Length: 445
Image (cartoon, rainbow, N blue to C red; front, side, top):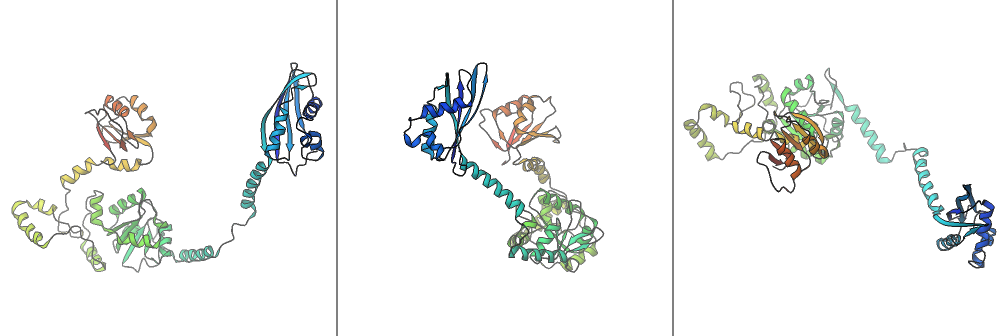
């Protein structure tokens, strides 16, 4: 009989016979034709009696005058002896009066199957039966601190904006994106932060910014950039600080928060960075109140040596018209009497030339291609692998392509054939010939 406690391997074999045979015929052939073949130590009858070999299981059926089936034999021997027994089965060439053929299909390691079951069962036990709510000392401490920080959060205005407890009393405040950012700043003792709650800046923030020295502190992603642009349009902010690229304010450590706030830049530089025109001049009484609140000197936009500084007014008065003189000076933000600065033609031309960089940044790492019409308006986004087929099927409405992939000779030839004006990719491949009609750029240009 089979001793399931000691079984290590199971031998599986396939049997075919040229005639009709049944299970007793197969079992009799196995014992009869292997008797004395391997010596007395590996005699199958003795091995079954001592429990070293399990019960021989035969599943066989007949059809069309032929028989076929499977044989399984459990073994408690090691690998070598089990392999010898398996090879002995293949020496059987007759079952009853019929010619037969036996071939070993596989040898299963029962212990490996048991180990797999143990691993899977242990996973389920760990998930289902252990109490995951048991907290370590650090987790208990952090949970208590979290509850204290939540109690410190206040809500401002009719918009119920999450804010630190010192926002109304502080002369300077931080404007962040969400409630989690305010919580993280409270964790490190910064209690003068208020959240805008999304890209739609509420009126409460605009009113608060008109009375305080404001630093916009946003995430280092595309969403943070959009919130800054929104704040520049509807609120009166003074400085801008950004989290490191790809990080959120809610996950910054204390050192990273301090570093980001130290590297804040004045709003004038941000307006130039995003090519945004200067905001209309604020009322004089608001400007006067703000200047009394500012506690630190803003970072200078440009440094001029004393000698050159003394020469500029004389040269400008003699050689430049009044409008050009104004455009070369750094305009104060809160003077009603001075006209609004007009953007220089060079800056506008440079912005027009670099319009595509925003799309390159958006597509970076997406393996996506963006198709544009004659007015540089996006038409649709497709996978880079489908770009060649899409261009072949185009009927002249596509003017250019920006895609996160390699500019190959095949894509370039199709673009020239379809009359595209420009092709902007992540990097340049091996280009043997470049058509003059297609302008080719990469994201590094």
